[in-house]
Image (cartoon, rainbow, N blue to C red; front, side, top):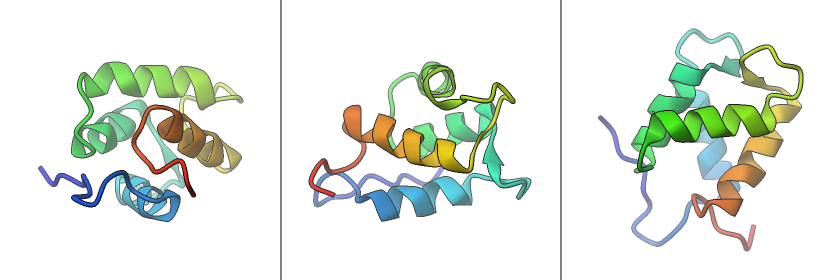
Length: 89
């Protein structure tokens, strides 16, 4: 498992977006619950499955079970709120 925790502190929005894109394993342009879980696990989240569920609940506005398009921007804000990225971006 690759860990993406930055030694210099929280990641930037751009860094997090690149990491999230790497976890779109089927290249459909969206992140499923399992893909989100793997991404959160790589970021060092405690209970990454729970975190993926919460993220989907908060950002999946069209209810398709994926985080895609504009929902990725909302996911970035969710990550910022929970300390995964720097709030100075």
